[in-house]
Length: 400
Image 1 (spheres, rainbow, N blue to C red):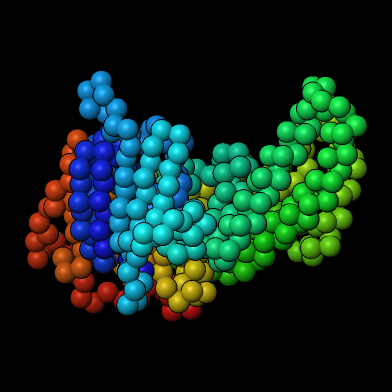
Image 2 (cartoon, rainbow, N blue to C red):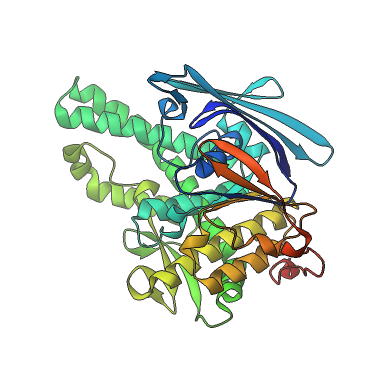
């Protein structure tokens, strides 16, 4: 799959832009604050229906002096085999809407149709951040393996929101307590089933991606790292190997223990939104026993494993979005990531403040663009800036 072109209308700091994209590498170079991340964000919107950074529809609108555009639009055409799909995303203050080949669509439709994998500085920092970032990493893998699970995640989120509202009403004495508690009891049956299914989807994905994750970690660390593993933790217990019935029983038990605390607190204290994921290096929790470089290597390996795993399931690579991650990696990890990217037949969009990597790719299917103050201009690649001849498959690809 690849994106043939990207068209922006009054989006972020871009007034008008029509940008043909190359089938392999598209390297966007420029100083900070010029709009590079906005381009990656636009592709993420087309393929996911959401941004990967905190934003409201108002944030997407173009500013012309004191005036703010009433709407922004992002268009693109994805090609999958012999088929092409025109995707249009309109963003207005308070709402957004998407069309696929002129037909109204939602984020689930986009996710199922146009897979992407994002690398960003935020994802590389996920281990040392809070558990929410680590849960998000795993949910990305769940969706990569089976985009239909997006419906499960949305249903769980809605059930959690409804449950929190009922608990808050009870805690604050809003409405008849007996009616609120009856509604809560009815909702709990659905909520804990969804919680069980979502937890099981996460643990299944972790188990299945582990071989590729271990191989990727060895690949980018040149076999200098010890054993790695991932654990899924519920109430301080390892739940990675639990069956669905074990997960359900554990959630029910925890609910009984915390039921009064939830009613007093006014929010849900039990469920997948409270679970944690541990990345273990030589048996130790990497949050506390690994260097920042090792932590970044672990997340980088996880993202590489996600790409390889996606290809093994779907027989095609997702579009890869790498937003300003090169400066976050040391020279050795950059080189190893580059070797991996050279060996996969995926379309790649990279942003950076310098051209340190452009010479690793030839000019035939690749392009470098300079981004400056909301404008994008192609930069010529000379023949001596690299060649695609002699590039071997990634060692990881040979495993699949």
